[in-house]
Image 1 (cartoon, rainbow, N blue to C red):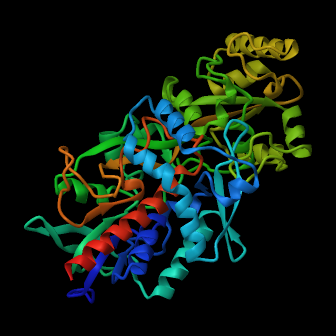
Image 2: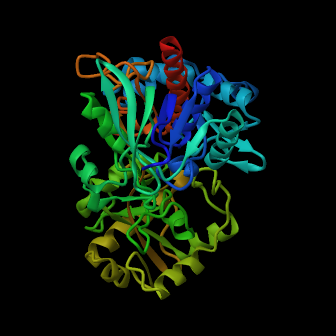
Image 3: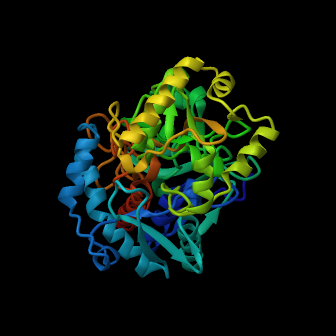
Length: 489
């Protein structure tokens, strides 16, 4: 028998990422006894690899004279999604973002600094700092420390499996402990915060427009396979907005997609991209908006393309550094010895990176017609010389010729950080059915298990929106679940 058997709690949280931890902390602050279950051996999940939280009208924004309003951000979100979002839910997420940042600062010693990812987005990205660490992992550490301080029961290697409902109310949760033993916790409320489904090829194929064979998870070591969403669906919950938060990436040796490497930094920016026919297909500054870049790449034959540059670009990156950073982990200006990384990849026999002396030899390596590739590069170099892109109107400041020294090609495919879409909820995070009615009293969902926040493409202009939503929805769910449990006592 499981040692967890016969335990009781006012609130049970399923998932120990930033959403689940925020929910557990807020519920405890509001007087509830909380048990949190995390199926991985450590807390944080994908949030450990996130960087910051979206926020407007914060003190950090005020000090940098950033004055975006809820109306402005919401209008852009509605347009970006082509109206496919849950309007009241997204507006609540935008309105509450600053409240969440303030709550984090009051609950923990976390501080924030403001950043942005590219030249095309506003300063809305709040990067956490805690005890000398920064970004998502810092916030997770602060949350875990706070949860331990509050005496919350935190269980790792432990999974939630089924919500028990009797006469329309939550009465318990079934789960599996670290030794594989089943258990039941008696509770009045369950908060689903399992982190989505982006490690399940089956659910990606079933629920999204993506072929799992043409996109790979950056966090392939996690096991986010949709249990929380499926638990809600078992109770009759409605769903919406399934998709993936995709990005452009060079494939790794194991089939996963790299988040960072010198070759990735060189290839993923606004250089020259050609498809498998050897032709340009997009203004490459689409790379500033990584989900849009992924859309452009995924739409091409076989869902990959080639980024091509010359030896002069390697010298530029070594001496001047990146024009487009990779988030705040590798900021603009970071200097790389890309040539060294290219040579290493070639020496190891990578099928994704090639270097040659001529266009015809490079064309042979990457399997495109040499005459077509020659014509494409010549035409592009002509646009660079004229300082005007007649084909895609690319910003001339990001156009560099491809003609000096060795020529290099790296395969760009589509990776994904996390899934988007899931259970329909009210703005109070109650899980609802197709008629808009709660599936049962005491069932809440937050973070990446919730649908309706994005259309078919994640919105980078609202940078950090997923991580912000995780903490915001967790905070709201925790407060509401605690209020329900206290009312039932």
